[in-house]
Length: 184
Length: 239
Image 1 (cartoon, chains in turn red, purple):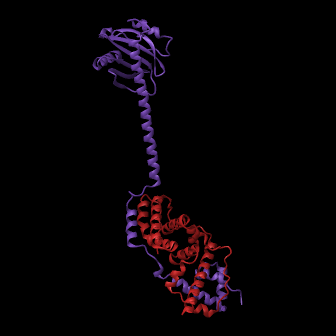
Image 2 (cartoon, helix red, strand yellow; image 1 turned 60 degrees about the vertical axis):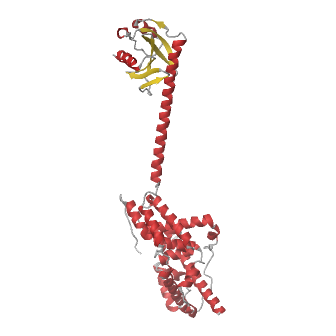
Image 3 (cartoon, each protein chain N blue to C red; image 1 turned 45 degrees about the horizontal axis):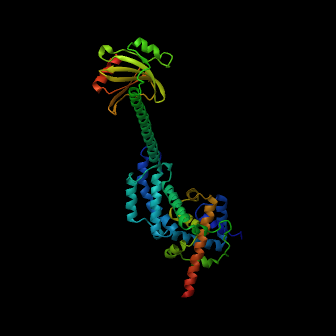
């Protein structure tokens, strides 16, 4: 996906409005994965776009998609603060959660299969901050530094969030597979 | 075998490791089947996460709505517009209040003129100095006012001067000249021009009132004379 950049100009507002809709899918995808349902996702994207248009002066150029995703993210977090504060409080304690699971044998990893349908379900079960970092990196292709700028988290934190997100996903996918195997 | 590098595998996979740690991981996974297998699993997970089926695009309806929002400025009121509107509102309110104040002040003044005129007619205090001689009336004001009123006898044009008095209008001591016209009394007030001075032509309670300024003085004239004759008086006085 492209990273349009724009300089200051008199018609910047018009250009911004024209280009903003090009990032609607990215905005909705992030909102959907963070709020976990389509209707809230659409409402939040709409809120984010209205804010973007209202405060278009604050756009200083650069990556427009990152700018709108940052606004979407802020709207999502405000949404949780308004309606579901516990969602944020359920997040993992990043300072203490370490990768402590024993290393499985190589055959275990080789045998692992990640079906997208399972990932779709399990992705919603990992902490919000981890999911957010994973989406921005894997689906939007942002670097750690760019994710750091969007989320306001230090690069080291982004790095550990991604590492833990993958580890949790792997564990939960494996656990799900094991459970379904046992039932059969 | 060197220590496992599990914590670094994710960033290694993303190409985000510093050179030193990148080399460390590269070296380690050559000889560590566990870490190498875990890296492969992470690669599979990464590939799955990039499956387009996991990417939820906005609905056509949302696209349409947002397109309309972005194309229409009418629904968008920017903070700059709010600032402009607020400033405009302040100016409008200020102008309105200013107008009201000015109008209120003017109303107070014109009412004071009417009251003074009526008082002079009914209270037997038409003049302090009774004289048709402008050279008698004018010196009488000397020392009583901080300005020198213009005194003219207009008997030659049918408006004889009959006297003068001191009065107070709107809290200011003024000079009042009294003229007659076929039994009608004309009160002509003078005071130093104020910053709020503005010409007025009104009829209040059947009395015609005119206000004008000339040089540093402000003039108020009131009478039950018709406006044509009163204007003739004014024109004659101004000559």
